[in-house]
Length: 306
Ligand code: ORO
Image 1 (tube, helix red, strand yellow):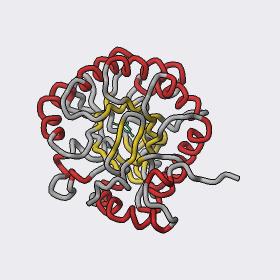
Image 2 (spheres, helix red, strand yellow; image 1 turned 90 degrees about the vertical axis):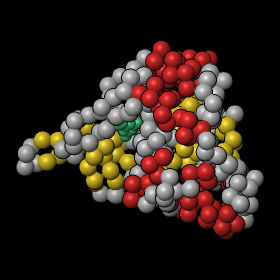
Image 3 (cartoon, rainbow, N blue to C red; image 1 turned 180 degrees about the vertical axis):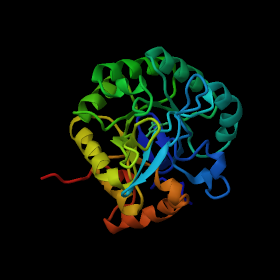
């Protein structure tokens, strides 16, 4: 049984059956994956970020492969909160996996209203505030300033009883400062990190390849950056962390846990290895045993730095 206490992990008011979650934007609304992934077993499911209104997203190209990575500029293409609550959430709420709903807005009021509406629905385990999408103007500002991060988190937190997670951008001078803002705003956890800002160029056309110009880099190429962000936040802020960024195998999961993440989200790997999360859950106990641990909680943040 994968839902043993040994794999359980707790982040503030949120307890997950195991630390293997799937990242927003890489798993659709989850139903698309039901034939290949046993959704019930996941530690958490994050459907694509929803906004107040439906969005068609950016013009093509919206993705480009890079060395050990993927550059995207989707532009928060999504069905909007009304359709999400009516058509997607009822399906998701029946799964035994915790459902964490990712939301984004342009203003504090947008985030607050989305948190309020989503938070009153049955079957929502937590809300992830996407303060870090690199591909729409407006939203990213909250994740690049500690004070605005604190303000939006506090306001969303006030609007609902449901745990609040803040997903931050690595494209800042001091991730720890922003995480401190999230902690002071009352976030239950921070999610580290969203994608790294990048660009791909078609030199023959002398143009950027992505329709939106710049995009967000994900995949194994960014793992050391995400791991460094987890490390920096763990060293200086007292808040649970969910690690995200290039996780592609069990070693990666263990590195994030030891560095200080209480759970991880699998993102880009879902595109080329959609059943990876299942294998990670199966194999996690053996990796714990290798370093003499029986529970996930035994190893979180055990990195020796001296
Ligand atoms: N892309 C990302 O890399 N991160 C997000 O949060 C959202 C998008 C997108 O929709 O473009």
